[in-house]
Length: 219
Image (cartoon, rainbow, N blue to C red; front, top):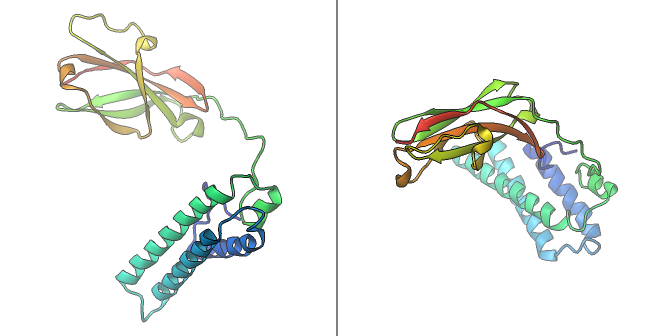
């Protein structure tokens, strides 16, 4: 049974075994699931190419850096095609639990566990001269907690002589930070202005408390 987040096994032998299972099941359910013949034929061909590349790379006499590279390319093609095949032919219409099990996929949970509320606070640590680098620093809570991994950075650019924001609620623009380190780009017209930042942790629509508001001069 697949346990990876995209429902494909991690080992190459298991990926081949899952492809074999899909081919066997789809051969009998092709009409019921409206799977086009060319799609199944292509899955078989890509599976066979991956199996051949694996055997070549495993052999003591034929294993070379080139054969290893070809094996990786073949399995990248196989897993990519399988993800697309699953999306096109297994998700619409949705399969029953028994269908999923027959394909080595996990049955869908009709009652997903709601995401936990964030418990951390973070701040943007700004560095750099010609460009502003941003590093998310956790002030409280653990970044390893799944509830604390979504980070929205709120900011506001203020010109000289303008009043600074009184609190993070006044920061009108925002972006989602997928990484804990990033570069922030501003236009030439913003040079010499001050930018104010505050980070708020998000998770499944739930928002944590504001982190400290920081500022930096845009070079």
